[in-house]
Length: 603
Picture (cartoon, rainbow, N blue to C red):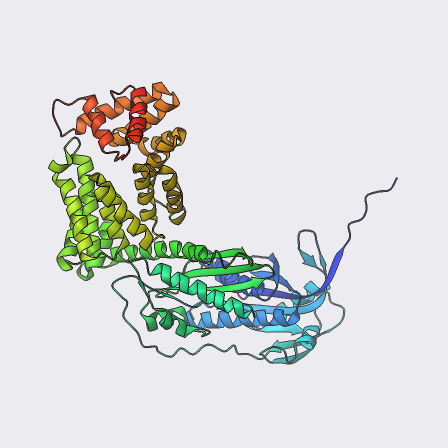
């Protein structure tokens, strides 16, 4: 009987790069967490992208080093030189605690294991060369030198023959001639930052020799600039200014100072076989810190057709991060330096806190902003939402034409439009307020305008989706809601309010009940409208005991808030609720009333 067949050993000739951090133990003793963070950034932002771009692969990492394999010794050396140049540039910008690597490269036979790990003399020699290397330098074996001579943009000098541990024959050793050139740092002309968050999009680097990819990378860049420009919160630097930095090795902080930009978007496009890889990252141009990075892999066949999708994906995250970062910065400024936009940001930041105390503060911020700048449209839209929230909390049962808060909400939105008819959020706000007055045609007009002006705005998408459900087109509104959740994965909980109203007319009652259970779990009496919709969904599901309990909370809660006819009872409460559902079609109102009736309410 024959035994199992032996596993075949895979061998190949490869260039092995070994890198190790200088002074790792000392760095860890001084700042353990900070050092680990820096090492992770070094590997993810400097080393691994360059290894990949030069056709290599990292097959082993340790706490302070790594091993990478290349099919070409020329590419391995170019990668190593690029890494050392990047570290030298970082050291010039942050000289206090620079990171330094020793790098050794060997060309030799290696054995590949099933998990991709490699070993053998080819790997061992590279590791010994790394141990011999000076900090910040690249040392190579004679075998590598013979292959790269005259093919790389660097000089290597002989360091003679060296005897190293566990290697029988002496090694011919060569070292790059350093020191590493550091980009000159001339003092740029500094432009002041704008009152609004300002952002520059640098031309995405073409990482392949294919000229078509230059057109594509420029197209991606231009799409990102165009889509970012839709956000009125942002000041986007014009293309001809940001493109002037093409192919220049300039620190992003210098770019920010030159262009007056607080943030910089940069990226790259690289073709690899049948795939195109696009990377993008957002950098704080004041501190140089990376705020966000993402990578997109697409097939060559369909990449041009989804260029807009990629641009919109980048923009959605970048805009959200920049706006959030600006809000945080505004809260840190001393009061005497706060301008209209800073006041607006402070109000906007807490506008989703619906307690009376918070809403009073929000209103004060927006009113102060308008005192400084009476033409600030967004402050008017902020006030519109303050007033509609007051109407919801304090106008229960009051006819809308007699509710001063509801009147002021519409009036504020109309003032915003008069000041700035080119802002999509202004149109979205007016569309929302028109809907609360059951002015369906007017609401649809302004919400459609808002969505066409900025399809990347998650708030516009979720409210447009809700409007579609109100108009009897929930199936059309649901995809917009899904886009909103994708654009803003850290969405506030009120997104689920709108989603539940979209799902209800689609008959997806279980999902509605689950969403509203989560929304009302902590304080059911604080959400009478949600409790009624939850009761209706449970009624349609036949879960009558739970539906009756929700109905009882609805009635008791509305009674405690009621400001209308003092003789009113549950029937009037239901009529008030159905009116505020803003349903245009009688059959949709009928569906809601049927559920409420099943839940025991006089509908």
